[in-house]
Amino acid sequence: MINLVSKLCALLLLISPMVVYPQAASRPFPYHAKYSADCIKPNNISQAKMDAAVGKLYDQWKARYVKPAKPLGQSYVLADDKGVNKVISEGQGYGMVITVLMAGYDKNAQDVYNKLFRYYYAHRCNSRGTTLMKWVQYNNGKEDNSSAADGDLDIAYSLLLANKQWGSKGEINYLEKAHALLDDIKMYEVNKLSGAMLSSNAVEEDSKQAGYREYFSTRSSDFMPTHLRAFAAAKADDSWMRVITSTYNILNAMQAKNTKTGLIPDFMVDIDKGPKPAPKDFQGDEHLNCGAYDYNACRIPWRVGLDYVLHGDLRSQLIVKRMNNWIRRQTKDNPRTIADGYYLNGARLHTKPDALHLSFVAPFGVAAMAGKENQAWLNSIWAYLNLVTVKDYDIDKSFGYYDNSIKLICMIIMSGNYWSPEN
Image (tube, helix red, strand yellow):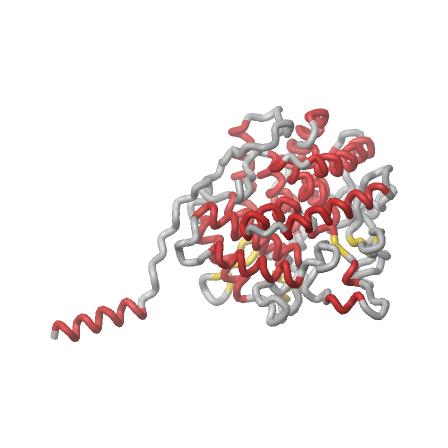
C-alpha cells in the first residue's frame, strides 16, 4: 500500500504544473544608473517626479499594447489593430526591454516578460537562424519566415538584461537563450566582409554576386552600439566590437557627405565602396523614402546617443551633436515643430503639421543629453513628451505602439533609469 501511494505521489508531481516563483529584481525601478560624467538630465523637474512620470506612462503603455495570446502563457505587443500587421518583432523587442527595466515598479514584470518571451520563442524562423524571430505575424494568422535584425537585437539585449535582473536559474535560462540568439544574429544578420549589420536573414551572402548588391546595404535602425558592447561582454567575443567600428565608420562617412544637417538615411548602399543613401524605392513601392531621414533613421539620435550616455564614446557624442545642432536651429528650440521625416538637406518629407511625432521627438531628448549646452532644449523635450498620454497619441489605433514605445524607452533613459547588463 505504501509503495502504491509513493508511486501515485510521484505521478502527481510529473503531471502537475510546476509552480515557479518570481525572483526579486536586482535592479528595481527606479534604478538611478551612473551615466557618463558630462551627461545631463532634465533639471527643471525633480527626480521623483520624473520617476513617477515614467511609471505612469508604463502603466498606460502596458494596458494598451501588451495582449494575451493563445496558447495561454504567451503575450505579445500589439502593433496594429486596424491593419494587417498584428505583431512585429521590433515591437516585441521593445516590450521585452521595457518590461525588464520596469521590474520592481511592476511587481509582475518577470511574469509579463516570460510571457513575451514565450510568444517570441513560438514564432521563430524555420531556417537560416532558428532562434531569430519571424518579423511579422498577420491578423489573418499567417506570418513571414524572414527576420528583422532590429527586433532580434532588442530581444537578445533584453535576455541579457533579464539575466542580470533575475538570474537564469528559474523557468527560463535567459543567458543560455541569449547566447543562442547572438550566435544566429552573428551568422545571419552581420555582413561577414564589412562587419556591418544586415537588415534580415533574408539578405544572403550570395546576393553580392551578379550585380545584385543588397548584401552591401545596411539599415540605420539596426545601429545599436550599446547592444553590441553588451553582446561582446556576454560572449567574450571581440568580433562584436568590429560591428561597432563599422557602424561608426558608416555614420561618419554619411555625415561627411551631409554636413548641413548630419541626418542619416533609412537605408544605405555600397558600403564596401563608400556608403551612400539608398535609392528612394530600394525596398520596393511600399517604402519610397529609403534614402531619407524617415521612420527607420529617426531612432539614430537615441540608439547612437545612448552610447555616449552609458559609455562616454566620443564618436557617439560627435555624431548626435551634428544632428542636434541642426534640429535646434531648424525648430528654433521648439520640439513641437519637429517633423515626421526630412530629406537629407533638411526639407520636410511629409506634411502633417498637426500630428504628434513622438518617434521623431523623443530620440532627440537622448541626443540632447550629450552636451550641457542643450539643457534648456532637453527640458523642453521632456516637458512636451510628458504632456502627451498614450491615449492622446493613439487615437486612430494604428501603429501607436511605435511612437509610444520609443517615447517610453527614451523617457526611461532621460530620467536616469536605463542601465546596461555588463555594468
